[in-house]
Amino acid sequence: MGKVNIKINGQTYAMACKDGDEERLTELGLKVDEKVSQLSKTMGSAGERRLLLMAALLLADEAEDAEAKAKEAANALATGGETEDLTKLMKQLQSSSIVLDNITKQLTS
Image (cartoon, rainbow, N blue to C red; front, top):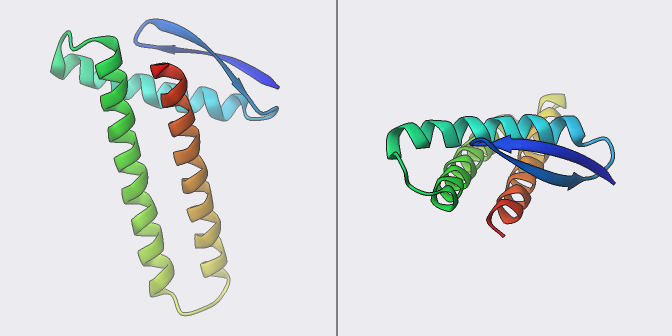
């Protein structure tokens, strides 16, 4: 079991992940921190939980938009290897959504 320390909005969180997922989880943590920082600047002192919740919702929305665009592109293609590439991309997006959901659960509990 891998372990990563992620710093979000000045607070460090110890996170567990599958072996080999440490770098990916660290990168996702940086994205969450960036989103929380943006929200903090616009919302002021909204509270840690509210900032994390808003960041999670915005990131989930972005992931859903990207997944919808990938599906549209896949549907637009008739056949071929490009469809397989888009299917892989959709699976990666779904995996990212699951990771974001897990991060959100850990951060809000």
